[in-house]
Image 1 (cartoon, rainbow, N blue to C red):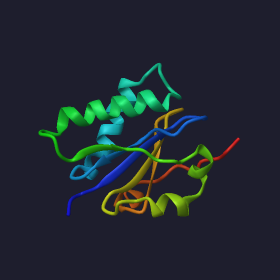
Image 2: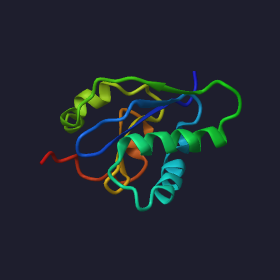
Image 3: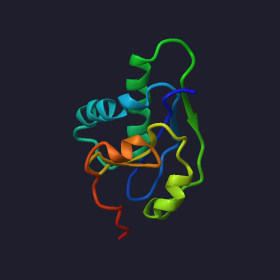
Length: 125
C-alpha cells in the first residue's frame, strides 16, 4: 500500500494543512532535520514551515505522485488530544506533528511513534 505519513505543523495560533506522503514515511525524520536547518531564524511560523517542508519533499520525490496537501479542521487545542491525532494517522509511519517553536516533533499511530524518544505532550498555555 505504501509507506504513508501525514505531517502537520503548528505554532501558538495555527495548524498548517496536512502534508501527505504516500511512499516516503521513513524519510520524514531526516527531512524534518533539513527543515530545521532551513528555518533557522524563522521559528513559530506554521504556514512557512509547511511550505518549506513541501519544497524539501519535492527535491526528493520524482513525478507527480506520492505528495499532497490536505485541508484539515484541527485547532491548536486539538493537538493536546492524542486520541484525536491517532485517529488521523494513515497507518505506516503515522501522523507527525511538528512544533515550529523549536521543530520538535511527535508521531501518532505509526511506527515513527516508537522510533525515538518523543517530547512531552503539547502543553496549552
